[in-house]
Length: 559
Image 1: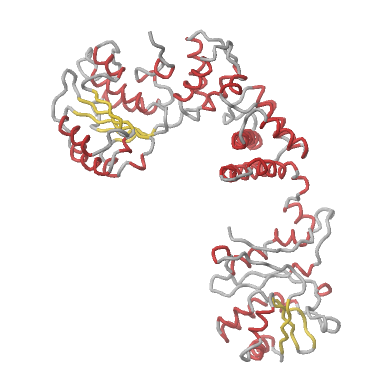
Image 2: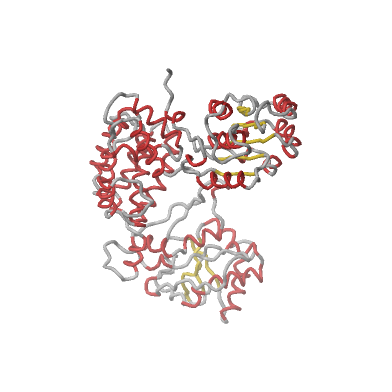
């Protein structure tokens, strides 16, 4: 007799046998018991979660010949039940939507649906992968689906319900099949192995259940592959030798080297994994999975049900999780997920993998922004050179109605606020604090008096100091100065400022000589708007980095 694969041999036969979809099974049983069986059902969910299995069980429950009416416990022995199990019943027609998706096949189905079943109560059509039908085929089915003959039932199954047109879905009772949890899959695998009298090690079960990604059929297919090796007892080593699963100990060692900030050890651990035949994407996936476990432990504890690990694995993961904080793990997982997609299109995936994991390993050379802000504010002893407080001045507020007027930028300390023009720095007085704080309001006054064009030229500027009645204004670029000095604008701007300050003022434009020189990324799609640029440059964290690390902004890119 031909061998029957486990996925078919241990397929659920009754509602009570269904694994992982108990709510749907219970609902269908209640519908049968109360006589409320719908004329059309839509079963949706990922592959291998029981859609076709439940469709067959429902068909057997409706057509069992041993019962006088639909029953929740089909006999499984009558000719109808046996034929339905093998997919050969003349009154239960199973159709593959992928290969019978044309309108002609649906028209033939519609014409045959008017004839009564040969021996059973109902003629049942089970259409798998129904989303593959063409729009014309769906439309041909609409009328029959809305008002089918009383002896006809439809059961549709699909993995992509979004592709089933709304007019079809509205005529069906929809059931969404959930992914089966690894714990449920693991228990089913143990039961099957015991029935098959196959010896196995416990460390094998959970990895197979996780590799199935919620699909019972995938789990049984993996188990079939392991059994076919002929090795007993089945061990976790077989997963690495025959299924290409990364060695858990080597992945653990790699993450340990990252935690140790051991750059050389990290590279050696990567090389060790690559030498086992793993690709870069497989390594990235394995590290993401392991770091996710560490994140769960850090966030919910080692005893949480969210972890699918053996007791020994939990102990090791718990010890390793203490060496990371949740924020670092979140960053690592996010970066690795981006790296995964980059590697697919790269000609140098190994270099990208090495560089990314080395970044994690060398994280001790990077400083947390919160820690840096604490140091620059005097909360911790400073271990890095601070930038002069000159750089802590606010960037000029952009012009526009969306700007908040209640913001109060920090005031620069006068003794560390030099003039920009070298020829005036020696004898110019300090800029008043109220002028620095209210400079954005001054620009708003210019806009009200002189228009948006003139005010826009002052965007990004700041007052630098007085020499007599001359106010020196720092401009970010020389081009902006040339534009501001044309068409009598200096006198117009000076008039507005004099009115607001209550004293005669003349202005002198100076190009920026200190402070962050910002290069905006080329291309209109990459230029951040003025408001966003203002927010970035005045962000406390950005200021802390610039001042604490003596850094300079070279570019702002809009992601």
